Image (cartoon, rainbow, N blue to C red):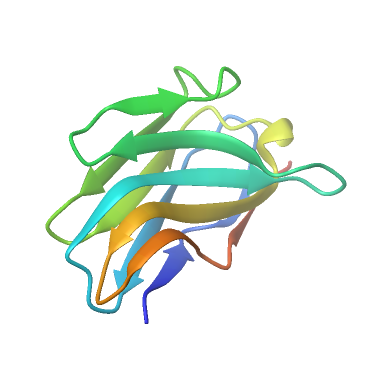
Length: 120
């Protein structure tokens, strides 16, 4: 069974930084795209950033220049470096993996989320 586990969330002051990490477990032979999504209270889940297996990245306009996504294909992990955090970045952040080659092929797997709160 493939699982994603996020870590690194917490409380940070405006202008601060956090680094989120997502570890995988289970027998994984490869992952197509990994990414981060977030959901603020009362809002829909939205894309934050994604990275393909060959390193191509996409970012939401709201985080461009502040957040940076990276992955380790050998370890099947993905990280999100978040700088210049603002209160509007407050949300639960979810790790996502698409095109997971395991003992079965999985179209999409989600982590359970980690809460990021930006407040003074």
